[in-house]
Image (tube, rainbow, N blue to C red; front, side, top):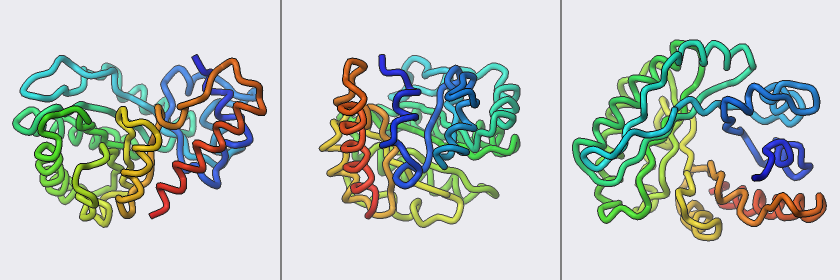
Length: 242
């Protein structure tokens, strides 16, 4: 496995091209160069730290997977704030249009309100499976439901969505005053495909993990590692600039 600290401390990994990093709880609890990870990201790299708060997804029901319960969420949110974390991320999975999709969004926004109340900015991630036989239909329903839900908010959130079949499908969400940023997830597309799709989405930026680390190995020399990482960041940043 690649140590996250090697990526974060790489000279290629900088705040000029990277806005934020989503941390696992155990990474937040560790240090980099004798500083708490979130503090290192912000103070040294000028990168905003987020925390993944979900505990994974439940079994599929009605074509979707809601999140498993998140016990002690308020305690975790308070700890994140103390650590200098700016926001959170939580992921659900949508396989088909229908009632399951509605259940995913209902749960996401209920928990998002709890996160906002704690003083953090939630990234809402209802991932549409790229292998869904009804991907476009699910995305149309998702767009409609998300617009309704963000209209009801009194504080802004961020959205992290699968790259859609219809270019600029989410343009009204991109422009919505209650959406701070609309992020795209790579979702299993390789980096070239993910970047090609992203480049067609106006105002959407990448939130790629798998696509970012493509080609990186623990065995690479520092020079090779940093060069490979720099190339990946450059490609993704370019695709995010439309």
